[in-house]
Length: 103
Image (cartoon, rainbow, N blue to C red; front, side, top):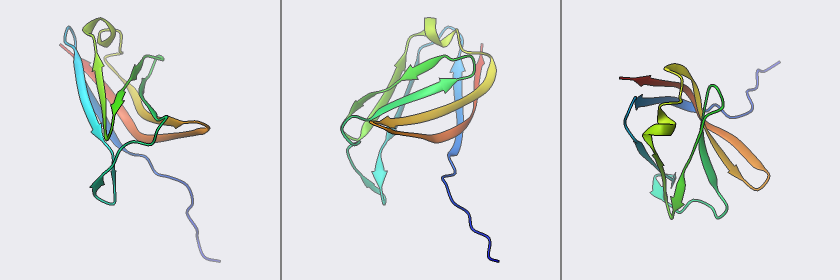
């Protein structure tokens, strides 16, 4: 019998945070190498261990995370992190890895 692999393998993720500093990052959506607007209704979040969530603001093809240092400072020094895509009834983990806060 032939082996079959089904499902999605999330991309690797490392989130670097600094105690006492705001966090800013952008994700640009591309389809086959072409920059394309995120589908209407898309919500992107970074979920950290301990339940802390950063939510992106989406404009066209760019999802921007802009988080105040008061929230950044609540993220564990080291822990699991994931970027979650939600749109209607679709929930996907796009990236999976670790978050690090230092300083």
